[in-house]
Amino acid sequence: MEFQYSLPVNLIFGRGSSGRIGEIAAKYGKKLLVVTGTGSTKRSGLLDRTLLRLKEAGVESEVFDKVTQNPLTTVVYEGVELAKRSGCDAVLGVGGGSIMDAAKAIAFCFVNDGDVSDYIFGRKQGKGALPIILMPTTCGTGSEGNQIAVLTNPETKDKKALYTMQIMPSASVVDPDLMKTMPKHILSSVGFDAFTHSLEAYTSRKSSPLTDVQALLGIRLIAENLPKLINDYDDEEAWEKVSLAAALGGMVIGAAGVSAAHGMEHPASGLKNIVHGRGLAALTPVIVERLAPALPEKFARVSQILGGSDEKDCADRIRLFLRSIELEVRLGDLGITVDDVEWLTDNCMRISSGNLNNAPVVFGRSEVAEIYREAV
Image (cartoon, rainbow, N blue to C red; front, side, top):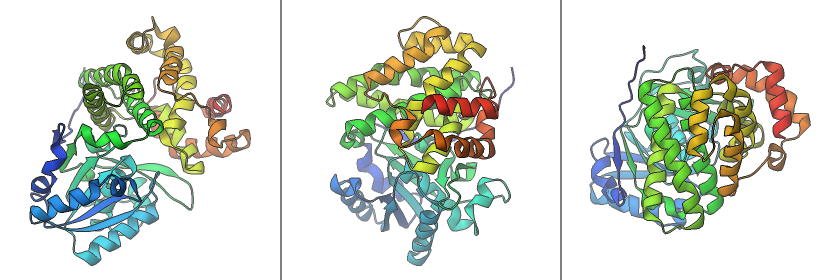
């Protein structure tokens, strides 16, 4: 048994912990670029509360609010320019996974000049980043717990991760109370994203005993508690457990990586700007049917957590779980057509080969195309 595990995540977890954001942020910078989205943190009042707490702690701030789902490299560059003009020395991301990924990338690109794609594809090596503080408002992507920032190049439609320990958050404040403003369809989507993080890390070629323990806990917490929240937003314990599962999912993919489902979904959302979790919902059962026979013990364990019996019914148990969280969907429902399959396959083989190679079965080009067609 050989493995390496290094994941220095400073998680501040608990209901009400967002109230400490001022004192926490003050440890890392004097003026923060506050990265957020176009509306939700403003409508909920969270952005104003955050800015007030920063001010009370003696921390100045500048707001950058142009990030949308599937963050673009061009938007990252805009954030960097604002941070430089404003004299910021740290970055605070307040929002969902796209916000947190953009915040990480802005902090990185502030220090590292040029095209971020050169760093994403390994043509250049970075030399650090501004301190990063994250405060998630969705319990799904797990970006608060890892060194990953997924970005889309609007010219090529390539969606791929900047993956470097240089963007590990200095601190992540995970307050389950902040998750409650999500609409149900967003909750189901991000919750399933968290589920697949743990599922893919658990069954990946880079898994280890440490990631297996965390991933199994994440899978169980999501399986038992996400359906509860779909039916009852007032279940405080369920919010805590799903929020913890999301953080765990982020941590395990930071160590063990994602595999085929994420590798095949990224081309779809890069092309059509679809919601990531919905794309995963369309692809994951189809992919699991092909992977489960190669790793029967692990997929049987996942099936049993979901109420099934063995690896043979794992894909169907995932379909039932998707039904329980109101997330039954096909790629065709998301705007993907059979005519897109060739482009998706080309992009997947070029951009996501590392993800495909991390799965227990490595799909070739023809299998990837077949999966896309079946998922449409």
